[in-house]
Length: 311
DNA sequence: AAGGTGGCCAACCGCAGAGAT
DNA sequence: CATCTCTGCGGTTGGCCACCT
Image (tube, rainbow, N blue to C red):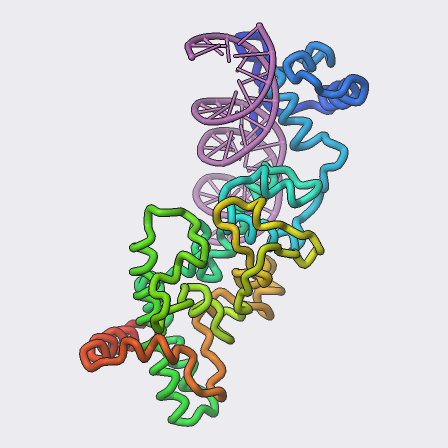
């Protein structure tokens, strides 16, 4: 931890001692914290007011909730981050006993990585759709589909799915590029640029992440309020511009960092888990039809061939 | 056993906005 | 209206610790 130092102005910096904590708590219990500037003198502390405020709000406050974040809390954080971005204090206001600092730390150290492992870009909350990251998974996708008791018909169907998936990923990229610079966290509604066309309603979420068996994400339903699984209701009007809220979480269930859950729950490499092949029509019907022509088939055959050849 | 590496987290820094003067 | 002060917020830093090589 940071070394304790004395500044030129004589004020102390660095980690707090139990004695200092005691003085601060006593003082706030006696007088409250009307003025953080005056409080250090009142408490007999050789600290600046800012340091006292931080120590109190992030550590000494009696209502601070200690211990690991629950899955519910993590989901709430991810949901809210998708809507309002890095507004840590706003997010903290929905999690009683948690501080903005704590949530920020959790986000930066764990949640970002969890989302990435699940193929979700933590900044945009969109699936990561670069071909660079997609192609290495294709052979696995194909071999997965062609193993087991699948019929040839289903194998062929699944390879058609793979081609369509690749196309959709590319379109997702294009749409993201088109929308780049408008908003860092686009509302899903605005991500549907072709109303009335076969692409209506198409978003990276509801065509990719929400495909049955793909990320096991339930198709989101739009409404004005969201009730979290902990029973907390959040009104969309409190969340600013990106105000549509999904009743179901728009991100996959979290993967525990602990190995025992990794083996049984959703694994990172399941991003390309095959769909249920016993249920035709194929997963990407509709959108895929939009792009079916000889030229594009040739192009995608090349892509798939290359993917099949890579190790 | 020792050094390297990465995760975690408390605390600090700097900026922006609100309110006071 | 301009300036100053204070507070709150988000970003960043750096030390501790556990794990790995």
